[in-house]
Length: 180
Image (tube, rainbow, N blue to C red; front, side):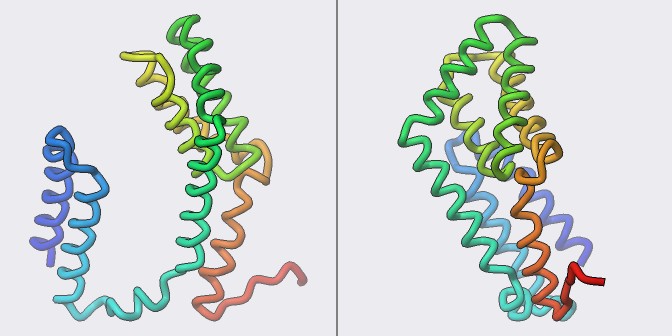
């Protein structure tokens, strides 16, 4: 089993680093590796594939997909274009201003909405900005870090965590009560 896991990890790494420059999307590599992992897991008797699929929290997958659909709707409505212009104004003032501006913007955005869609909004905005080179890379990292820090500012930013926890506990027949 250790050999199969090592082959899987190596395939994933090679696929991610070697195939992307050839134009093969990372999602295709990840899907292929997921199928390989499914086959490896099916060979052993430790994990029941049917049980994993049956107990997976599919409601959360649907909610996540819906959040991303909303993000692309916001992009089509011009939100990411507006953020791209804001990021360009930060970038015009240099590396530090671009990094701090992108990070604080991502943190504020993820503090008022879930961090997953806010990071995607930031990524689409950075992609649409005029920034390049080191400034663009710094803005990407700042977007990710700001998106992770933002939900710590207000509880609204991590509000989806509670339903995920409740669905996961309910699938295991555990009940979380707010009463003593």
